[in-house]
Length: 555
Image (tube, rainbow, N blue to C red; front, side, top):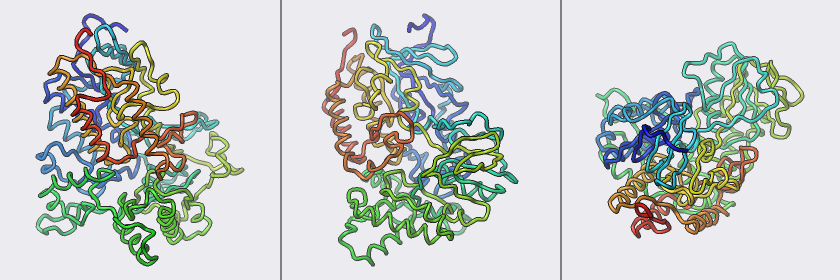
């Protein structure tokens, strides 16, 4: 694909203007690279632009789900809740874009259709869906891990006469479900967040559940109160202890340093003891303490939670007992009990989810053994009957980690297409670069810790590594960087080895592509832990980019 002679050329083109794309743009600007961003949405925000369903909020506490690169930004922004809602996160992203004047280099409402490497000039040729063409020395894919929605191919879906929604592409206006019979398919994180709020509004809510999900309470609360009342109600929960916002901001750097030393890049201290070495009374007390604290740190209840099936089962049984205690109808409670290992699917964080099934206007339709037969013009036909609906919500998740990249026609050296390279599953060096695709970088791509961590710190680590790399190449007049196939193979093998017996890889989940029909079953994120991964990346850079081929101008 040749670019017209008058087409613009940049040092770097970035695809995506979410958290990753914005920080990438900011860092590249500061390093003196001429940069341009393409974004398919009408504004910044990435996943927080699209996911506007009722109850959408982050499952990482807001004081940690924020950029760390600017101390001034950390101090000036005031979060209002322990777990920020989607509107508040979007306001934060817009604040960042405005504060650092980022929009002037972003082209909105523009989808990248193709990215093809020109071997003659060592540059990427970018084609957008509107026919525009651009070239760049480097291409950075910052499209996020959860940005292509998954809509199962239900028979008759197109015939549904009511209103159809997907949680991952929710309308930008408020939806009123009052006096409506509403159906929601799926019980993953977005459903767990939205079901309690929809149930409060709908005449009746039918929840179609194939697989029950583990979720722990968020115990969300406001962070802002009357400023005259010092500390009162302003607990920010720094995970290590009940810190106030003022205390965290007084040592924000310390919080970040603690986070970077943990497996998931979250500042909380896992229990150093084994579940198996404690008495039953001690275990139950620790479970209760973690449950009362709530949130993702529940997974740190014991050090062997993720490596011992016996210890994991103790935690899983504790949550099942909580479900049976909360849900009054024993048949419904039984249907809500997950039987797989806890943590192999991403743990959800909720507000009143299980309690919602005690409402008289909520019906759980258990389709685990007998799947939904079809969608009709009037509703959903399952278990031998039709459930009449005014609105149907697809809470069916995403084609995670690879879906968006594979929607772009990405061609590398010798015309190698990405979908050909990934025909048997994604392969990448460090989750950052791909053999056969010079000068292409993927932020939080498959093979990196990404979705198993606090994404903000993982994004910043990747962006900083990429910018340091590009400065290294520029200073030495090097035109291309590309991982060797050997290094890529070694990393894929290492990724598979650390995941082989890990709890995260013990069931079918979107981590392995289990929610997408026909997708190769490969455990995609790196489960070796954030500190270990960062050290490996640091060592590779320190040795002159071991595992990469560096080619000078014209070579």
